[in-house]
Each structure stands twice: as C-alpha cells, then as structure tokens.
Amino acid sequence: MKILKTIALITFVQLVSCQSKQEKKMETGFVIQDSKLYYNSKEIALGMPIEKFTDAMGMYDRIDIDSSGGFTNRTWHWIKLRGEAYENEENKIVYVNPYIDDEKEKEYNSIEELVEILGKYDSVEEEKMNLRIDKLFIWDKLGISLSAYPETNIVGNIHIQTLHVTKYWELDLGLVKNFEEQNGFPLTKEVKEKRKQDKEHFEEAPKEEYKGNFTYNGNTINLKQIGYRGWDKGVKGLGLGGSDFDPPGDSSTSSRWIKDDYDMYVTLERFSNEEEFEGLSPDKVGKFDCIKSIVIWWHKTNDQ
Image: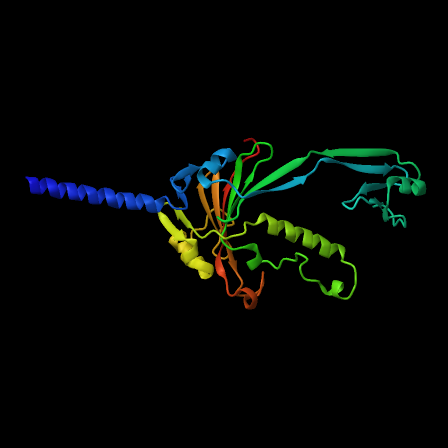
C-alpha cells in the first residue's frame, strides 16, 4: 500500500512539474490565447489605461510627442476676379484662379501684399483645426512601442519591432552631405522635407529589436532564433502557413493578418530585399526575408 501511495505521489509531482513548465513556457513574451492578450503571464488589453499597461511591461523609456492642428485655415475670395488665396505650410500666401490664366498666380509674403495688387477681397472663409497631441510610448530595450489615443491615455496599437528601421530604409538624417551640399549648393525643399520625415521615423523607432517569444493559440516562435531569414519559419511556427487568407489584404508576400477578435487584429509585416526593389541593398545589410514587425491593433470604430 505504501508503494502505491509513493508511486501516486511521484506521478502527481511529475504532472504538476510538467504543467508548471508548460505554463512557464506559455507565459514568456507576448501570448494571444482565446482572444486575450498577455505579456509574461500578465493580462494586457487594447483600450486599457497606460498606467495599467506599465504594470505588465514595466516603465517605458521615453515618450515621443507629435502635435498637429491648433491653427485656423483661411481662404480669401475675390468674387469678380473669381480667384482665391490661401496660406501654405511655409506661411506664404498663394493666389490661384482656376478660371483663367492669371499672371498674378504665385506666392506672396502676406495677404496685405496681395491686396495691394488685387484690391480688397470680398470674403474670408475660416476653418479652425483643433489641436491634436499624439503620444507614442517607447520601450527601447524591449523593442516595443504603443500609441495612445489623444487626451485619454488609453492603449491604441502595440508595435513590436523585430527589424530596426535603419536595416530596411535608407534614412537621410543629415549625417552625410549630399551632392548639392558637397558642391556648395543650398539644400532643396525636397531634401529638407525628407530629412525631417526620416528623423521623425528614426526617433519613433525603439533603439533595439524585440528578440523574445510570440505565441498565438499555443504556437510559439522566438524572434531571435528565427532571425532575419525566418519569414516562412515564423509564419508556419504560428500555424499561419496555410493558403486561407483572411481578412482581405492578408497575403503570403507582404503580410499575414490574424483576425483574432472583432476588436483585435494582428499584422505580421514581411520584409524581403532579395529582389532589391525596396529598401536597402543586400550588399549593405545582408539578405533579409523576415518578420519586420508585429502590430497588434485595435479595430476601433468611430462610435466607440
């Protein structure tokens, strides 16, 4: 009888140990199971306050703030001339006349300057653009960022960076002089705008790549192990290697979409430079065919 009890006890301990190991494995990294989202065994959710999100993820390293709006668009109208003017992004007044070829169609330094030429306008139309402040919370070491909805500080989309932006995008950060600068010519408007946009993309990207686990309904992949050539391995490892593509836009060449729940979608973005039609040359960064990022996004409707 003692022997039977001993065997039963050993079996029980082994079962508990195996179950504990399985649970521990499932708890590592991001886990989507039964339409719920976890990080290291702690449940997280799209739409939750950022303060609760940091309980699971730890404190973010920095916040990138992008503001837009907060100004008033004005359009000045001349009825008899059938022309109008507006202010562009460089604070210049642009006069246009869609009905005739008007030699006065050009940029002016101020509306007063244009009025001296055309005479007083008949009306002015104003459209106030509300100020919008977007916050991006960034975990540099984890390779993770998330957007928060303005004014509410609730989690919107979670971006898991598995390939850094500098490895697939030729960024012009102004660190190397271009041809015009080398020859003493001023920077063009196009170059200035590209450098501005590239700098924004660079600052929004976490400094490191996510190298942890990602689990979908019991299928786990490790992003570090599958590496920069692991698109097929990663997709098959998550059980998404079939030919049934849903929702529309899902494909084998550019991305795989997981419609796990009406309010939660997951996009695995693919990057390949083997055909050299996009991004940096393989001669510079090596050959890539990998998961560029995993985006968990909130399918939020306007009435929510």
